[in-house]
Amino acid sequence: MKRVIAILGGSTPFTAALVEAFRAAPACELRLFGQNRDALERMKRYAERRLGWTVLATARLDEAVSGAAVVVNQIRFGGLEGRSRDEALANRFGLAADETLGPCGLSAALRVVPRIRELAAGLGRRCPDAWVLNLSNPLSVTTLAMIRAGAPRKCVGLCELPLTTFLETCRLVRMSPPDVEWEYAGLNHRGFIFTLRHRGEDLMPRLPGMLEGRTIFGIKSEDIRELGALPLKYFRLSPSAGRAKFLDELKKTLASELEAGTTPPPSLSQRDQSWYEAAVVPMIAAIFADDGRRMIVNCLRDDGLVREVPARVWRDRVDVVAAEPPARLAPWLGRWASHERALLEALESPNLERIEGALALDPMVPQARASEIAQAIWAEHAN
Image (cartoon, rainbow, N blue to C red; front, side, top):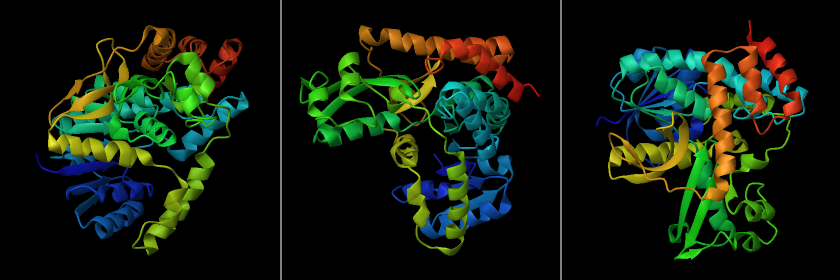
C-alpha cells in the first residue's frame, strides 16, 4: 500500500497539531487540501520543516486524493461563523452550545450534511479504494451521510473520547492501562465504558470509592454508582457560552506563529486536539500495519445506525469485536438510538415537523420547548 495521506481541510492552522502527531509515524507523502492558498502554503512549509516528508498543497480535490491510501476529512463546512450561529441559537434557550449534540448539533447537521454528501460522492469517484477517516461533527450522522452518498466503502468516523476516558480513569486509580481490560458501547459522544477488569477483578463496583471524590472529565462517583457504568463526559453536559469566538481568535494567533516559527506554535497548547494523537495517527498506523489492532471506530451497523464500537483494524477492513452491553444500560442506549433515527429522518427530508420530532426525543432538550426551538432552527435554515 502506497503511504499517501490526504488531509481535507488541511489549510487550517490547527492542522499543526496533526503534523506534530505525525512526527511519531513512519514517513509518508502528505497532501493538504483547502481553499485558502496562503494558508495552505503556510501549512505546507510547516509540515515540511517538522516532518521532512514530501508535502503537496492543492485546492483541487482530485489532485489531493488520487492514489491516496488514507483520506482524513476535517472540513468544517460553514466555518467558525456557522458554528457561532449554532452556538447563539443554543444560548438563546439556555442549552449547551456544543456542536455535536442538542439543538446546536442539529443545526450544525442541517448545514453540514448536504455539503458532506457532495464531498462523499466525489471521493467515491476519485479514490474508491481509500480509507476515509471522518472527523466532521456531528460525527455519527456525517459519517452515515458519507456512506449513504457513495463514499469509499472503508469509511469510518473517529473520536478519541472513549480511549481518553479510559486512560484518565487508569491515571486516577493508579493502574497501568495494559493491565486493565475494558469494553465500550454507544453512539458518538453518547456511550458507556461498562467493563473495567484489572487482572481478573471487576473494578466497576469499586470505582466510585476509588475516585475519592474526584471526577472523570466531570462524571461523578454517584453517576457511576447509579448507572453501574462510566458514561462519557457529554452525559452531564452543562449550558455553556460556546467556543467559536475563542477558536477564531486562536486560529489567527496560530497563523502568525506558524509563519515565523520552526517549532510548534506556543498557542497550540491552548486547544486540546488529542483526537489526532489518540485516534487519527493510531488508526493510520493500524491500517498500514495490517495486524488487527484494536481501535474504537464509528462504523455502520446492521440496524442502519453508525455506532461507536471496538474493532480490529486491518489493511482492508474493520472487524467489530464489541461485547454485549449489560441490560441495565438498554434504556439509555435505546433512547439515544431513537433520537438518532429521528434526527436522520429530519436530515433526509428537512421540515419543521421532523425537526420538532427529533428535538422532542433529544435528552438534552426540555420537551416543553421542543416546538419553540424547532421553529428557531427552521427559521435559520429554511432559506
